[in-house]
Image 1 (cartoon, rainbow, N blue to C red):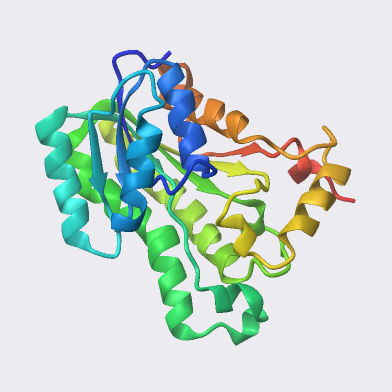
Image 2 (tube, rainbow, N blue to C red):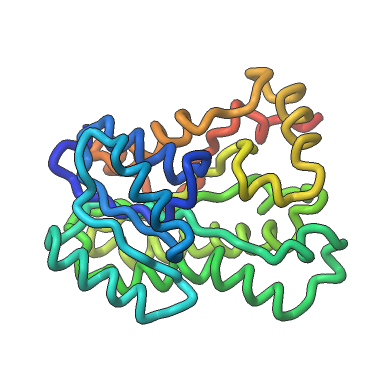
Length: 255
């Protein structure tokens, strides 16, 4: 499904991350990957994980999105290694721990700006910088969560950041559509990742989700990865500006 396609994934943190599930799914479908990592602390982990793929990545590169020069360098590396890319996976989100523990009304300005910059603006920054290396039918995929629409206790500023991210998906789809580039988001159900455990009461969220979702379970990383592979493929050529729910049906429930 993805044979011959080059896809960049920013960023992989560890083997439990959704980004890694996506990387494995795309690798299984024949994609040649460019893998991003945030800093030296995560570099060794990503290099180790890369050895599990069927094909060696075209590049493994740093991309801390708070440094514009690293995004620019990523574009230069992609251009040198593969010329153009057919897909971009944006799997970047962060909020300071205090902002996920206190009530939302107590969110500090600095924490708010940090969450919005890394979790939402980074999609805009990457799309703009990488635009020269997108193929004529490239697909951009980002990750969101239902907390962008409904109040999830302790999700707080991340819910606001994800709402901004989803609006950005629609505006970017409009801006990039004339060049053939599609932009979509996957709204994944709660998955037990290292990052998710930073949300207070996360295990309770998992339990409630499994009890109320139509499929009576939580979603697996594999299922999110498979959906991302579909969105990166030509099978989804008519889909852009959408939020695709992969949450075992939880979002359709009213009670």
